[in-house]
Image 1 (cartoon, rainbow, N blue to C red):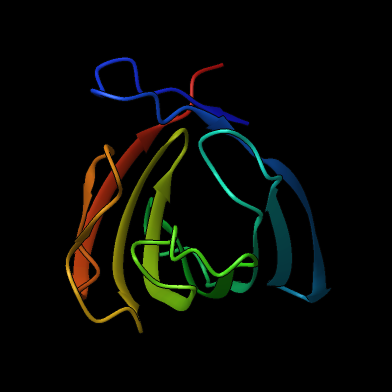
Image 2 (cartoon, rainbow, N blue to C red):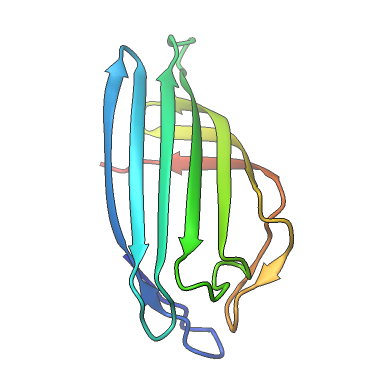
Length: 142
């Protein structure tokens, strides 16, 4: 994956590698694990992230196919520069409910992290690290 920030004052572009797997471990319960690695490059130091999640699909309610899910992740700046929002490492998590109808999905999710401040990346965008409740709507096209 590559991240491009064409409007940034200074170049903040970088790329990362991603590997992941998921499987149904029991009926209606899926586990997933994902690993990201940002190799040392001009605009980013060595950074690795690992996360795991669970999704449980509930019984259909009317036209809705509901599922509940949660995720926990950990990321670390391995060279200690504090590139990660001014910190060397942090843990993040979320939990939520997704309601799907055919190709449309609505997600209601609580996000949080153990990072304890609002930080700006050097010449990059602003990031908030406090808890949030987020609603997302998605349409999957054929």
